[in-house]
Image (tube, rainbow, N blue to C red; front, side):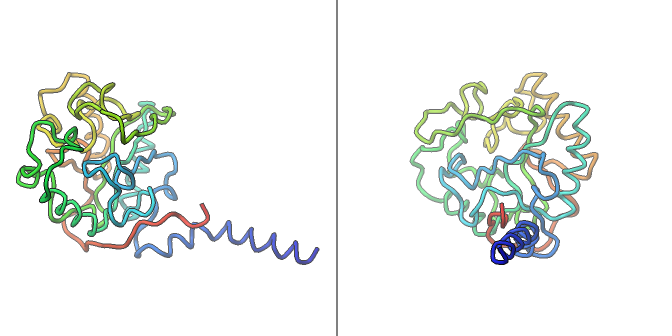
Length: 253
């Protein structure tokens, strides 16, 4: 009985200290978004193959959103603000290790086999860097930038991504794109196209209103949009230390 009691006590302590142990692996000031607001949906695209490279990116050892604490807290405030709209945030990317940024640069400089052409249907792969869609340095690596969208509160998960499927271009009708349970913003996430510019007039009035709502609710809490990408927002002043620690799963979860 004593052995069983000691085992129970150990497991109880492990359950209590699991998230704390995970947090200790992060640099000071960084947190798992799930530990700040678990109601914010996460669809971490670079941890899987549903992204413009077609592969998981280096440093994404887990599909978890990691951010600076102040950014995560700002998103939690936005999430609370969205209750009256019956909407929720969904994040696609948060902190991004610099090794992943370097992998982006290697990808854009490599040959184009057309496997992920749906992400840049009107551009040549070699032009994505000059067009401002892929950069050699990223605010994501400082933990101050986030890619996100809106979903209906309580929305069912999207069907699983099928890497063998022939999905339509990111600029096409939502039903023909890769599965996503988000509101229709006119293009998919990471769509390298002029229609992704936040103020693009090529989208329907309803799509433009949804983008405007996303910008407004985030701006109210200190997050500012990048004009070429309706999904990209940064918090606070530019600059700051770029990090390369790997994203790991939260201990005990």
